[in-house]
Amino acid sequence: MMAKKCFMPGCMNEVEHACKCSSPETLMCGEHIGEHVNLPNRAHNIESIFMQPYEGTKEAVLEFLAKENSKCSELRRKIIDSISQRLPNSEKDLEEFIGKLYCYLDEINEFFAKISQASKLLKSEQDPILGLLSLQPQEAIEKAKLMNIASRNWCNGAKLFYTINKKLEGLNRSFFTEIYRAYLEKRNVQNTPETHDKISKPTSIESANVNDSISLIINENSGCLKIRKENKAIKIPQENETSLLNSQMNAATNNLNASNIIDTLRNKTAEILSRPNNPELEIDFRATCSAIQINSYDPPLMQAYQDYLNAYQQKTSLYSLTIDEDSRVNLIIYNTETETEEVKILQTPESLGACTCITQLPNGKLFCFGKYLPSGITELIDVNGGVKVLPSGTPCNSSSCIYFNNSVYCFGGHDIGELTLSSRFDLDRNRWIQLAPMPKADYGCNSITFNRNILISGWKYSNLLLYSIDIDSFSTIPHEFTKNRRKILINAKRLYLIESYRSIYESDIGSLWNWRRIGKSNINCNPDQVYCSYNKGGIFISNIERPGKAYYCFNLDQKSLLILPTQIGMFHLKK
Image (cartoon, rainbow, N blue to C red):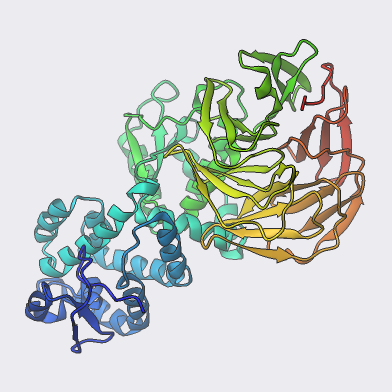
């Protein structure tokens, strides 16, 4: 049995003593047992860190917290059980750690909302806990003293959370942002009745004359959303306008009446993304403009953040990498709105034209890899910035390729025979990471993401595979789909599966075991690259199997497939 670690924040020593004075047991190493015993007022118990106010707090707050103390005891016990374990040292351990907190997040969110109400009674500018977490540890200590809160208790709490945050530096996300992003994808908040009601309400923020001036900025370091007022688009708001905007932001931050903020975020996102070659399509992580920051732990706003990322993967262009008759590598771009094509000749070796995996990154660039070469060689291509050669221990011919959370996931493939390959390319660290192998070898795979899962369809396998990102494991979704047929998966609020020259199926995200046949497919899909784009009620599909007829549109309303015109001949990949 693995030895338990000391409970003190930042200490990784093995436990030598156990204190019986609180429940659950607080385990301390020899170095900290004395400090533990001398901590006043049960401050060594994390329960008191969350709830114990300073003696000078207003009577109303004391009464409020006293009532909530009994209600939250079970919640605090669960938090203690999770956080008191050994802090994660690796990304895999971190994912397991986050997974343990999933079932508590509703309660945690409610808990923080109540703390926020208490802080309002104190007339503080910011929630005490989250305010401390936004500072460095030493600054948090000084701030806690200035805020007239029980400094020893709050400081220990801040140190504990900052210890966890240090463990998250590899993912470049804050603690609450990472957990809530996973939580929202798992819960699919957008489809829950409560959130839907909030989102569907009419917007009133236009009265502040800022609707046309809002654009979105994602701070990659903090994981927060920002709303920017563009000076070139609007006059500087008057005092009453700024006050109205701030009041709306405060309401959204507290999960109250956030509909106008959400609507504005989504509408502006759609507007920006609908403009071709607009500079706003590039996310500016270094923006120094005046901005209002929205707390990243707010579920509706985090859903808008996820919608924003998803929208970047649903642009109006389709892409194909091919080799023309003169052995040149072509990048063919098909505009689904104008039904026109553009060809870019890449200054790359001919072998790069055999890339079989393409996915679009949030910055608008294409991530391409895989070709018909011996195992162990993979070329990573940024079609907008040249070629980068990266050795890999696995082949990527005819595998699945999909972007999620600043990584590209790859499943299956072919190298003499089908592969059980599963790997992830970390765009931050610029390296491949091996994942759990697929339970069934296959190639020509297609995949989609939802709720922190990846659904995978293969060429020879009749069933679907569901990969859990959090626990790195597969499960099988049994269904009698046709073997030896390409199956295209599409996530457009509902799930769609299109079989090559067979049937079209539909399923709800919450019922993967129930697929309904809704039509007949006339699309001829080979095992090589297929690129899908969701735009204006249709699914646009590119394929390189048939010269002169390489593009298709699946109409979501009519549940039918149409062949789109093309002027540029498409050629098979050379093997």
